[in-house]
Image 1 (cartoon, helix red, strand yellow):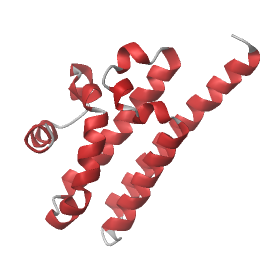
Image 2 (cartoon, helix red, strand yellow):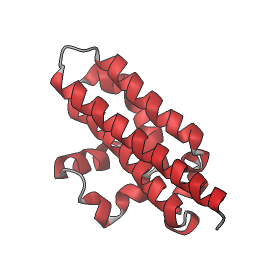
Image 3 (tube, helix red, strand yellow):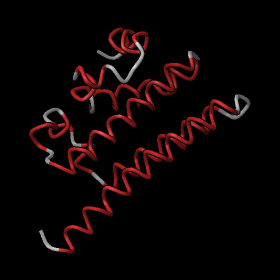
Image 4 (cartoon, helix red, strand yellow):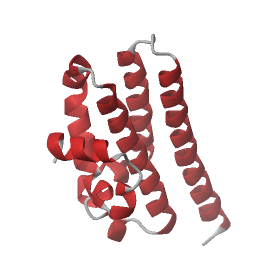
Length: 143
């Protein structure tokens, strides 16, 4: 691996981690400020996910994500797993809100994202990252 390839990989990894931190901060601020407009918050969260996806289009390619453990190697696998976790956290945030009107608006995006990253979600080590009630809701609504 050349020095340029190494630094390129480091920068790619750093951008994915920073995007994850930004989404995490958005979620924290959303919980603190219940009066904010839910649609704007979710639009911003989803926009960040899609921007990260534009930087890493392979993470939004269903033929790759359905077999991600074989397709992505080393650092790219770590980056994908972070991206998939961010996506499922986004889905969990929308479903946790329990707002029927909000769910009607966001259900198409939620279903699309779930289908892209369903294999990641199904792995037992990833199931442990989510509440039982969320897992049950996903099975009823998305699978």
